[in-house]
Length: 417
Image 1 (cartoon, rainbow, N blue to C red):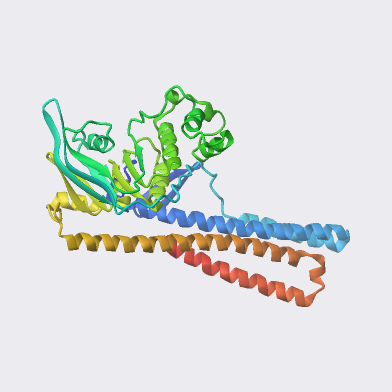
Image 2 (cartoon, helix red, strand yellow):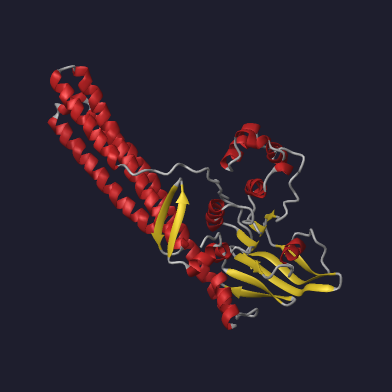
């Protein structure tokens, strides 16, 4: 089967095929299992490629030195080294062409109070039809809340009530201390239709210079003539990217998002998921993308008739509740709520430590590559060949760097898994 529904694929498939860069790749397991395997394969190939190219560069420098001597035996050595380069090139993994990937990071945000959103007795109806009534909400700092329900039940309307863009029939809603809200609207009505892409960003954030705006838009895949496009001529995905960039520049600590993945392609959805997984603020989101919900949610709000009820967990938890009718409660004991809150915080601390360690490893691996390169250059120098002690010292130094590199790569793979 062919499908863009990643949650569906994870439930039913045991092998995965991917068409990419004119090639067909195959892997065992579901979509999620294949993507993990793919990430490890690409990273391993990249490191092997860089290692091979570094060795080729070292040999090429030796060839240049041999050419300077201009003797017959030197040309024999050169021919041997050329064959060595050819053998290395033949074993290098083929790297896929770099795709234009959305670069999305929310960065640090202002810390809000513990209570981010409080709503009491919210009610709304149209033309005599009640969408929901007496809705009470409490959203706390760090929550990842997803609002689920069938089309037409009032999910977008409820978000509109919270943002005061839709009038309430009854009830109140307000934000907590130091809460800075960023609203991603499904229809993107806030975008100015008569502006160009560049004018939309520059006009919304005049503190930025035009070159800064161009650079930011480039990170969001708007390059060359793209930034001069009129907003009304953009595709749904392009409009979503402009809206996401504006959202990031505002640095909100509470994101309210209505179907943010609707117009994004598969790779852009994954980039958004990664960014939201690292996001330090609070999230309230409407989405029909079950994989997206499952990866990010720690609390589900779902429509039950005209009521909105709460369920701790992700989409799998919600699906199990729909199947069995178990574990749903809008009145969980205070102790249970506290324990769940403390557990979530501990999990978040553990994840932050993991991400921090991964970043430190990647930084050190880059340093090691530079140090190995410097040592290799010294080894290639003519004066080194006649200095036996220096040769031994540099060779030992290179081996230490190789060992450290191998250990860090193993740890990086384990942390990434």
